[in-house]
Length: 385
Image (tube, rainbow, N blue to C red):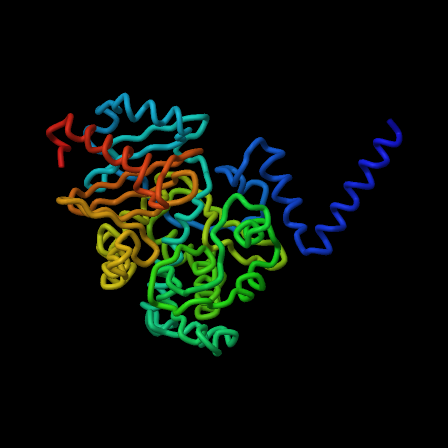
């Protein structure tokens, strides 16, 4: 037994040494955070195991309640899906009034959970704000104006608009389950800026959509350079305070020392405060009659940049049917804020799991959350679209 323990200690020591030698010590944090908490991937409450910065709010205002608030029962199919996929929050907002809300698994209206990639929509919105304020010239401004690493080769062609529309042609590998991928290293490492600036431009920028979280991270770094502000502070003053959010949010950072936000993910707040950003875009950038975000930028953001990939605009997922046009914030495990402006409808779902197909978030569960919301509305003539 003593020999076994001795050999085990030596093996562990060798493994740890190998992690340091190969610059993969972030794997220790990944294992400690994920597997030691009973998960196999990043999870809703993992922000509690990371460094965070506060996104402050100001004077808050609750969502008005619809006159039929929580009077329309959820469909059985919706309730079954909530159970099997671990939904923690589900909202239906009709005509800017809260029509239906439900919470599960010990969560409530103020519970925080991880946005995951819904944060990308906020970063795109902050780009629009920076353009509106004149500190970034336009979507066509080269990234090389902010980072000289991009002055040579294909990198010199990358624009801030390419980053917002996922068309930079970068070497980023979007892999969530490999411990050695850049995605995992970015999530659990402690120097996100150096990691991001180590990316290369592999294909012609501005030609095609390729989902890459590194694009959003680099965009956030551009915005910080342009504004001279930390992104969590800029989000607070640009949107969180003006949109009258009820709760402060937390935004994960790579470390206390660097305080670089994980911009492609990781804003922790509640369902009703997430919904506010959907409302802002639904209302063409206006809030209480004030133009918070340029309407032209909003309109461009929720239209596809490339005809070949109509599912994505500038930081927003898109889907058109015969009579409806949706745009959506979407994140890992099925976090979503779905907007249909013609019907004046917002649907929010937060939860532990999702099922989707063909790398299209609208395939699978998210379509069901939409369909069942419409079924609920059709059961009441006063809310029927």
